[in-house]
Amino acid sequence: MKIDKSFIGIVGILVIAGVMSIALYFRQMGEVDTVKMSGFPMQIGAWKGEDIPLDDRTYRILETKNLIMRKYVNAEKDEVYLYMVASEKNRKVAHPPEICYTGSGAKITEKNLIKFNVPGSDKMLEVNSFVSIDKGESLVYYWYKAGDTFTADYVSQQVKSAMKQIMGKMSSVAMIRVSTMIVDGNKEKAGRTLQEFSAEILPII
Image (cartoon, rainbow, N blue to C red):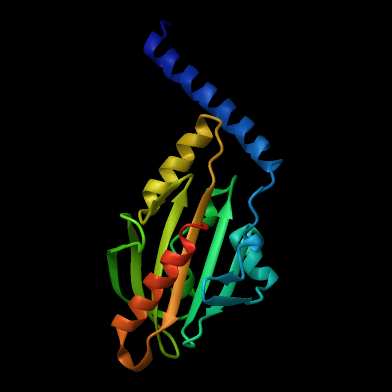
């Protein structure tokens, strides 16, 4: 029986890809994140933070302990909740937060993609935005970091990370989420608060 050469070529490519994937898997299993989220500053400009404890179940679900959940408060008593998770070996940790919100019983409304100027620079930050309703209303912004790039696109950061992994390069990913309560229905003020805080943390991230 004559075997098509193109078929042999395809099988060869699949075998090589499989070997590379296995090697990459075991290499990643032995890696440890070198950037620790716990080292993120507690004092950021006028904002002072305090850690919010997380339980073991949360760590198991996320498959990492390299994350922080904090409440930051400024002199005007504005409160922002910061959640950041990162990994240099497991891109699954940076998933859309709507999954966690709806899983805990919250209702998600007003989903948008917004851009705003970062004060003090000519840069624009694009973020995902939504309102969470659960014992009150909260405005939530989130975005991703893939290597040195910020993006609001989940698929984009996953693809960039996967391509780097295939090439054997470091493929760090992170998801940054900030939220604040909407007081007296004033979503504009909540948005300004999140944008000001985001601008403060961006250079550190």
